Image 1 (tube, rainbow, N blue to C red):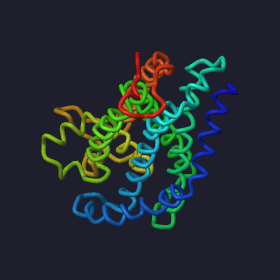
Image 2: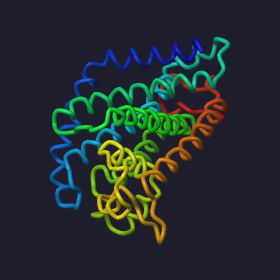
Image 3: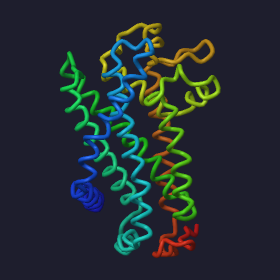
Image 4: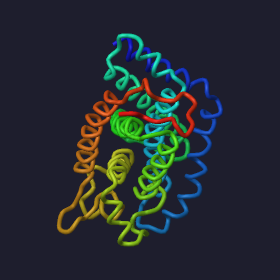
Length: 278
């Protein structure tokens, strides 16, 4: 447990010391809010500003959680990870420390945006809603931190990782309904969006944040918080179950992949020979 706590604390300190990142966290989401709220006004969504803000919060949580992959690669290339492994530490403890620290940072960023969002119109009628919102951010952070760690432990070298990371995160980001309403996408991309776990994470989080869990199925579908696949409707409750299943799967896969990586044969230079030898 001390190892997990030490890794968690180290990564939190690295985040807090990065002041430029902290400033951008507060500025960029509201630039996107201004830009995207205009696009979403063309849909049937009743409160586009709060709707977009909720989507931005959860996409920030996703992107921050995925940064675990970048930080893990950097630790491996720099040799820090090798030094940690010199001590009698189980790799599952290292994986847990990485995942928990990434989730903590992601949740903290989401909370900061929600606090500022309160002053631009995001209100809650129940005191339980913020608690549920934070819990859902933690869940999404854990899910995609596990996914990011799986990517970091699976790529063959640092150059390949950059390509794979962009190829994976870009469609997940832009095909989840946060930046572009799913109703405005071509039919083929709408189908792909329904295979995207972030689509369901965003839908559930928006429903929870906007306190619309009690809406009827037709109302949820009109606001793109529920999705109809053939004759079956994926409600927000089903959406969170999909995210949970995805998270459990990649939690198992990430820890398994991480424990198999041979860190002793990684080139510290990060050049073309910076290779994971399985």
